[in-house]
Length: 515
Image (cartoon, rainbow, N blue to C red; front, side, top):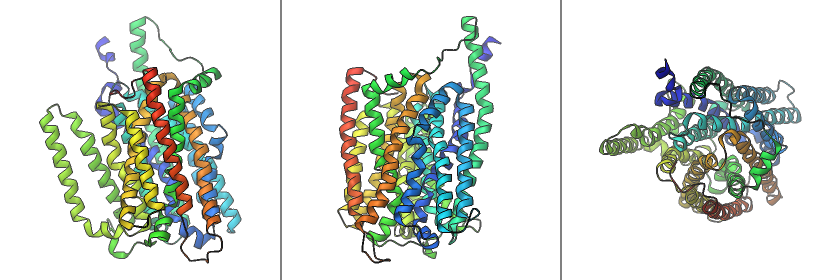
């Protein structure tokens, strides 16, 4: 019997990855709901009469509860309640918020513009209150199952699921909408409900893991050990006083403030500045099982699967030559797929929503690869510096320059940066902070991040309206100044990355060392 309980569920590679998939359902669905409105901006203006400022208000107020400390409260609850209860409670809040937004968009509370706007905002506030705590739950859970194994890679794949949700939400929202906003909102809300059911399935295995680990602890010490201490407010003060944690938390603010708000406006920018199409031409549609939405979704799923095949599967092979051959085969298969799809992808690259999805699409491909690099090679702080440099290039190319070719490179650079920095950032926190305080640590970072997001989501929309005053309706909007503001975020991100690297040398957390 002793030999049986020495191995737990987390010691099984297949079980760890199965749990990651169940957990990543919440990540996928919440990122979809977070970003799918970006593809609907034009439709919301024409069907509902919303302005850019009102569109930005919907996005900005999503973060308002978290700006007031909801994530920190959720993180404390996570450390006290545990993963399971916190995930169910805050996942339920996100589901409720999605449902209210869906009913508001359908006109159930009233069909006038003001009522629909307020209902969608209330739903988004509730959704946002659950969203970030769910992200903390996901990150904390991955540490629980993968610490000592492929932690950075697991986090990268979980983020990849999130980016897949962002890409598909952005690209498919118009296809699902079918000319009306309501069906797209209802579909996005339904995804969160399905993912919560997946999390409930996960909790069954999580209970079993806890029992196994308690049994092993009891066998070794003669009694069941509980090493967690109750949360103290002084823990939060200690976190903020830690220079390495402070720099990485501020980097989280400036980096994501330059990414997420931009993603919401990117389709509209490409349509207004570079003349991209709003509606996808019929020749660019992918039909699968008689559905355009399923066909388009299949393209993103194939991209994601190739990323997994290239970055994850080869790690299970002991023979180095076989690993190399498998990667070459996966890359060759990917290139063949691109050749087959070249005509359709060429049309996609002239559509605003589909082209904007290059940003999260780049992360789908590169995040698992960079996560693997962080696990095997380290250099986390250095990769954050490189990602910040790419961020600056991306925003300069999309704001000041007017070349479509350079704009494509800018979007791809943004996708790579969006892979580099998170793949290095989130595992680094697990090196800086004790495991039983990771919930509070990640919650603190997400709270600070939401202050930046709230300001920039709303601010970009308000600034866009301000700089385009007097421009006749239907004429292209000028995005130059709003996007230039994001260049400043990239500059600050580089500065903070250098400070983090310097602090790590002094505090010796090993951020530049392999996981």
